[in-house]
Length: 94
Image 1 (cartoon, rainbow, N blue to C red):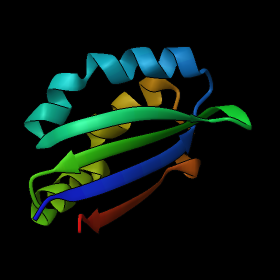
Image 2: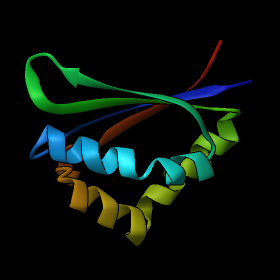
Image 3: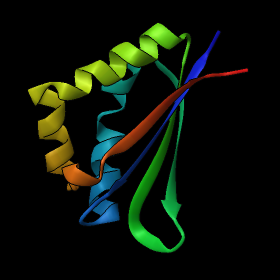
Image 4: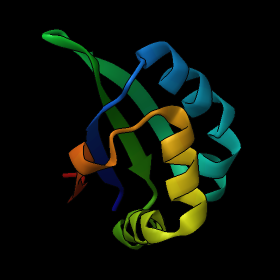
C-alpha cells in the first residue's frame, strides 16, 4: 500500500528554498519518493508545504528517519529552512 507524507515549514526566502528543493530531486528519488508536489501557504508566502508519495509505509518512514542526519540538516539549512518550524505527517494511502 502506498504512503504519503506532508511537510510544512517556514523558509527565509521561498525562491531560494525552491531552487535547492529542485536541485536535490535525485536525493528524493534515491530515498524512494515516487511523486511529489510543492505548495505555498496563501497567507504566508514563505511557508512551504510539500507532498511526497512512497511505494509503502516503511520506505516513507525510512526516508524521514534520515532527516536526523547531518547531510539532510545541511541541505535544509542551505535552503533557508527555519528548522524549528519543521513539521511532517506520514499516512497510509487508502
